[in-house]
Image (tube, rainbow, N blue to C red):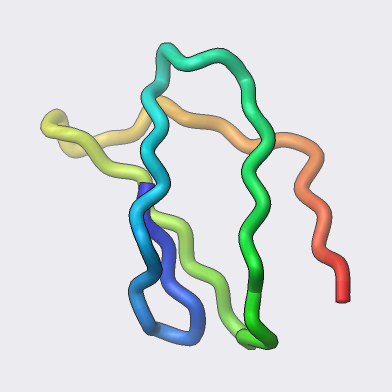
Length: 56
């Protein structure tokens, strides 16, 4: 999974669809926009998100 903060690509987070559920924390660094990108060789993603929290 890759993500960008205000358009700037950040380090890759290594996760696979078959991995057990895990908590991931992303430091937003005061960004105004967070863009998540899940991709694979088939052109679609098999990931999900739940209980998303944004804190200042």
